[in-house]
Length: 301
Ligand SMILES: NC(=O)c1ccc[n+]([C@@H]2O[C@H](COP(=O)([O-])OP(=O)(O)OC[C@H]3O[C@@H](n4cnc5c(N)ncnc54)[C@H](O)[C@@H]3O)[C@@H](O)[C@H]2O)c1
Image (cartoon, rainbow, N blue to C red):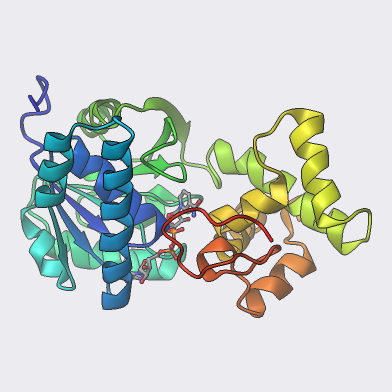
């Protein structure tokens, strides 16, 4: 694939975190013609990522949505590594690890030492301050939020978040990269939850309160929002899909960052996460799913 003008310098993309989001981002980048290094600290997660990506690419090829040539080329372009230092040659590194400010800051500080001086460090965080992540590095002008939606190969939106010091040049490059991935871009200032999660998470939290207070069954809450407001998924089903642990982390960031009790996480959501019911990726959340780590979507029981 020809690299458009202005994008010549981006050849290698590093992705840190091979979970739901990181594996999808790595797939998207490889299909768009970039060489990709995918790193996860958990070797089992890397194994699952390879399986999920190759199944997804095969499915796209069999549906005629991707040529056989591009599919095979994408698989060749993708390399997985348990060694973070292999990402040192990357022009852009996209972080998609656990939604914890402390853990992400530690990683950004490591990446700052490993990455070449010109590299851009992007975070797929759903809610954490880009300005604070940038403060863990010596290159705050080259740090930016690149918030993909789940699943990244399918969803059409990328929310770009500019930190206090993100340069215009870095913003322009990341916007062009997102467009090359075939996405529509929206731009948010760096405030907790940005645009999408600031609006989505209070709705998901309210659905948990409705369930917790016995207003209705989970099925009726989801059916009500699907058929009553024309949403493709109900809020509880969507929370399972996002990951209840991820939803809880985002609500905590909104609650702490905006200082309003309306963002306080519902006790039922907290209890599910405490019990390890983190959603579809673990086979159980609000609903129970047929298979653990199913590559194909499993139906709700
Ligand atoms: N799940 C969603 O719908 C969604 C949507 C948009 C953005 N996000 C954001 O994307 C990020 C990842 O979410 P996810 O749903 O893919 O989570 P996930 O739990 O599926 O994957 C996280 C991965 O990060 C790895 N990891 C954790 N710490 C690490 C470290 N220090 N170094 C390397 N790897 C590490 C874990 O082993 C795991 O494989 C979070 O910041 C989340 O808020 C999630």
